[in-house]
View 1 (tube, rainbow, N blue to C red):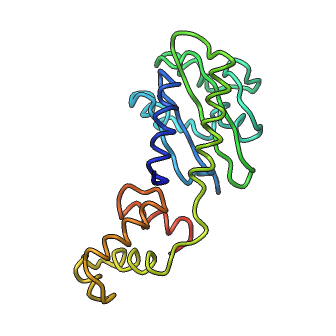
View 2 (view 1 turned 90 degrees about the vertical axis):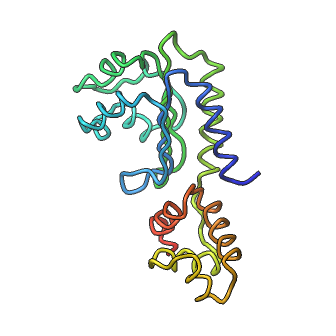
Length: 203
């Protein structure tokens, strides 16, 4: 099983545990996550984004400052913008937040449902999934020279055939290098792999 396939499996489990969706910001550095996954309704995402709630959300503030898992109802922080109340209007009635990892690379995940509170066993399972997801999405410390060369040529605008010729390899060998780089960077496309490699300062 590739690393990206493993991440997909974890996300499937997280989705099954979160009937009204989840938001996962993984390895938050410089105020933004290196990776983000979410299944909340598009209406809520649009509303949340339009009002700039990321830096105002008590759930995120809580997750940044504490390790562990808590029900939203237990978050004892001011909510001057009534974000939790607005979330309920979109069906995110009950929730849990998990904060995990060092402050320099913190992951925060919020999960929601509309029918009842999460029970203790469900929260324990979600927290375990978050820890596993955090480890699985830990960015690589390096790429191989072959992976970097292949990504850099595509980033510079070369087509596959031209990039392969420049490296003196077949086009299929180039595609294999790009595929291995995508897997290492947990990227679905080469463009995403290039951006992540840049974000991680590997290119």
